[in-house]
Length: 253
Picture 1 (cartoon, rainbow, N blue to C red):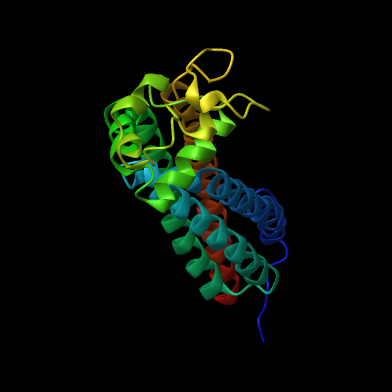
Picture 2: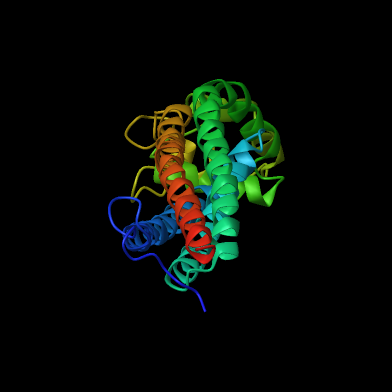
């Protein structure tokens, strides 16, 4: 029969206090896991169209790690609650080790996001024009991504509509087609823009700048959330270890 020293079970290091703190922590921890999942999935569905335009694989890797982290956090929130409420010392120790792993994973995600955010301008400037010129019309994924990009951001080409003059799309279109730019470069409601490069018919802004702003926003969001919430893990590690130690002490009484 397990005996508790109730006389000493008071104050900020008491079993009851630590259990209460752990329950509150796990509620916030579980909610943070849901937030990770929602942000990660939202980022994936909003950005995955543009992956084919990027040379680096850091964009999808960062998003997948973020989603995986959210799934682990959501699951471990339940494990933490079970270990706390039932006072399962082995479960709490396992929970603390997983929190440590999640802390390192979140830190990696945040750092990767910020590293890629700082390099996104160079990659787009260096590769977007080449990708458009060499792969549009010949690669279905790139074609869909470019058309979506140009219609979403009201832009045309990498730096301007004149980028299409030297593209393989221009070489491969029908001789009877007098188009100078793809139809996705047209201003809203205009069906004849592709044969005229006037600013009233064709989007004149290049796509590098608006796409860069769009991707940077998502990367900064992922980096900030990842690094910010990683601090939360440290409190969970401390409290779960303290509770596990307290349970061990009371069992040995």
